[in-house]
Length: 146
Image (cartoon, rainbow, N blue to C red):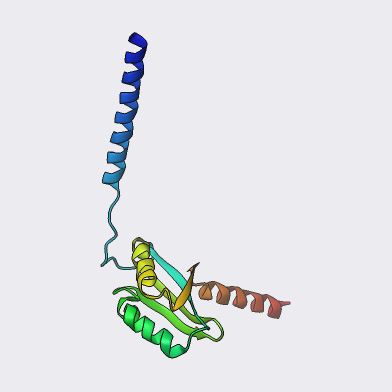
């Protein structure tokens, strides 16, 4: 009897501690703000490959995108378009900048409206231009100094 009581109490303590931990963990998470603004300390850039289905005519793909509301939903309001290019043979390549907290919102906008017309690939991106130009200048100065 005493052994089963100890087992029961130990089980109840384990369940209670797990419940309290779950409640505590839930209270510390916050929902992303749809109006969050990208700042240098919270911004991420994401390059998205929108690979078109080459087995279907362009008019059909455009009609599906319109039906699914692609251009109404993507990018979500407040998400900055850094570049949007056509890559022949691939499709469209879009780079956007937004607060990291809005990643799920950007993903859902694509899942809900682009799939079917496009296969998507995502790549975290950062701006390397200033670094590359500085390295280039440094290399050229070293070359002329020799």
